[in-house]
Amino acid sequence: LAGRGFRPEGTVVRFKNGVSVGGNEVVVMAGPCSVEGREQIALAAAQVKAAGAKFLRGGAFKPRSSPYSFQGMGLEGLKLLRDVGDASGLLIISEVMEISQIELMLPYVDCFQVGARNMQNFNLLRELGLVRKPVLLKRGIAATIEEVLLSAEYILSGGNYDLMLCERGIRTFETYTRNTMDISAIPVIKKLSHLPILGDPSHGVGLRDKVPAMARAAVAAGADGLLIEVHPNPDKAFSDGAQSLFPEQFEELMASLRLISSAV
Ligand code: PEP
Ligand code: MN
Picture (cartoon, rainbow, N blue to C red):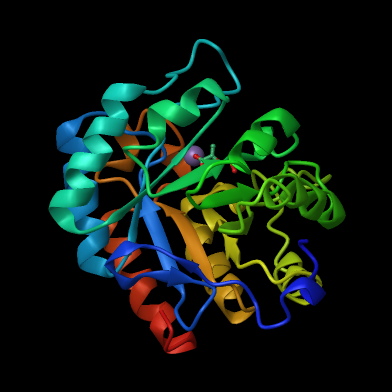
């Protein structure tokens, strides 16, 4: 079902506000790694909206490497996302970590994000296949493209065709960057599958000053959209501050993306 042959013309995932992914636009989803409070998320929303983002991202449930790190605001964070999203006209995307969170999240998000660590949580994927709300499936940290497409199959086979994939970097022998952003995965997935493919340069490189170059590379390679971490005050971020863009950097990035593609 994920193969290009199933839908040669390509999948377009439609959202409210007339936004669609996989059609003629390059859709940018931006915001902080984590929702930290009303003031922070409201400010982030205003900043990314002004620069041209269509989605506000922000984790309420956070998959942290250490159990002692900030784990997210949970339901409170989801409510804040919905509030500021509605107020600013942004769509909402947030990560779902387990089956029990699906029901809880439904009223608050426009799109479920499946994180890299859950790409092969097959029970979660199966359950998301039964939901009638779009899903963004991120590539696992050590997953091959074939494995990404097989994971997509779990969601599609449940009847949920509103699915998008996301390249977010993979683990290689290189340690300079947090992950190695596999730009080539974008044209490969475009060829193999009809599903829209986004790029996440923030997790892809993990270093703020390298994010714009990789964002441009992803768009030049044909990405249908981008997921980018932006924080009103990255140095004070509860998570992923080092890879979060300052709002001014994000605005500059958006302008430079428009030179590469008129679809941004
Ligand atoms: C995130 O988007 O903040 C995140 C945790 O991403 P990933 O699952 O790609 O690590
Ligand atoms: Mn993050």
